[in-house]
Image: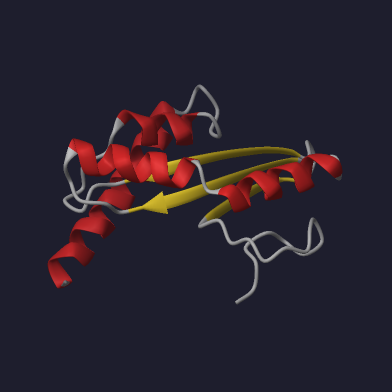
Length: 121
């Protein structure tokens, strides 16, 4: 499958779930989305597991070498729609500080999709 990193930036087989690019500032935000069990332990474990994926360390290094400013974070949404504060913080780092309502809106819409999909399973 193709990479989620635009090929004009870097040729790689890495596939972060969400990639947000600001070409003017040469910033690239890499996000991993996980839908773990809705328990606090499940959410924390998922975050720790995804934060320490070695392939993203290499990807971040490669992006820095070619002059980009990469950031990497994870977003967890519990299988019943729970949003931990770490997910809010991950989006807040990308979106303007004045847009807290946008951050909440993005994550609430994502939580609705998770809940709808969980009911289908």
